[in-house]
Amino acid sequence: MNLHDRDITRAAKREGLRQGLRQGLSQGLAQGAQQKAVEAAKKFWGNGVSQEIIAQSLDLPLEKVAEIINGKTSGVSSL
Image (cartoon, rainbow, N blue to C red):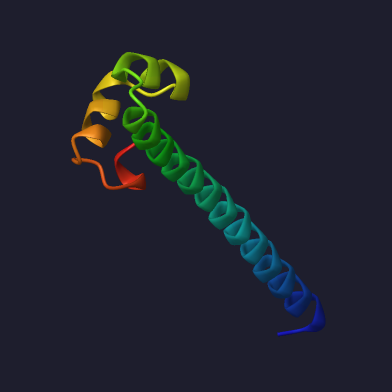
């Protein structure tokens, strides 16, 4: 392997690392937003807000709000 090949290999590894970090960050942010929506739905429900208003306010399907409220949704993966 010559110096040129090593440089290409290093550059490819760096780009792979950057891409992995971007993807991980994006997924983490999405999961955090979904978890926040679950927490907000539960809090709204606890304060007497209707399921329809919760769904509209959080931009969630009514079925998902019902699942959250009925305890069938524990967190992120189901939104």
